[in-house]
Length: 65
Figure 1 (cartoon, one colour):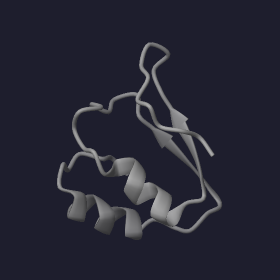
Figure 2 (tube, rainbow, N blue to C red; figure 1 turned 30 degrees about the vertical axis):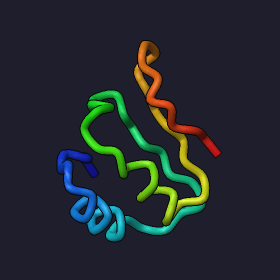
Figure 3 (cartoon, rainbow, N blue to C red; figure 1 turned 120 degrees about the vertical axis):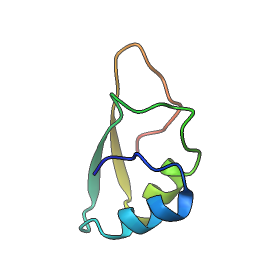
Figure 4 (cartoon, rainbow, N blue to C red; figure 1 turned 180 degrees about the vertical axis):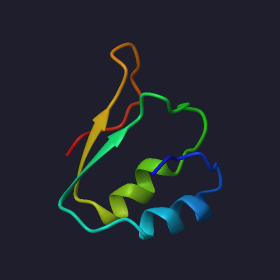
């Protein structure tokens, strides 16, 4: 899934379609950190553990659990 939409409701609907899993890997290498403020909040509603894949030069402030 690509997070291209900046509307939180649309992102929440798309994340709702993803399969359930204890851990999810989220690739943010092409993500603009100023694009959407609700991404982490929405993912954490569904997944207990998130592993963020980031460019080595970026820090988005997302915590891994």
